[in-house]
Image 1 (cartoon, helix red, strand yellow):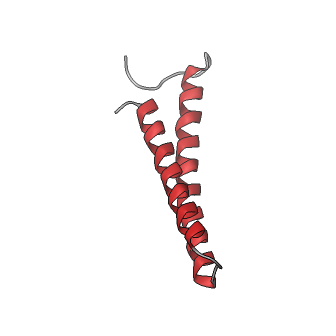
Image 2 (cartoon, rainbow, N blue to C red):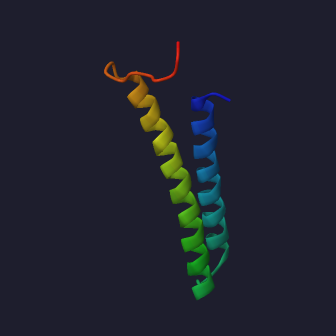
Image 3 (cartoon, helix red, strand yellow):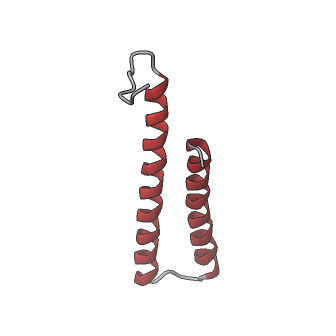
Length: 74
């Protein structure tokens, strides 16, 4: 899997996590403290995934900059 496909898969996973959270919360009339805890846990998962996607994107941008010298042997 190349870098772009990996980023897309990562972002889709984050989207799915948020969609599941929204669906579950819509089914509940009122929220309890455990619901807030669950939201916080799910938000942490999404944050970690988005940070990973951001790192991948930054790595790709840096590789495209002319001053960047790849240290791998030719």
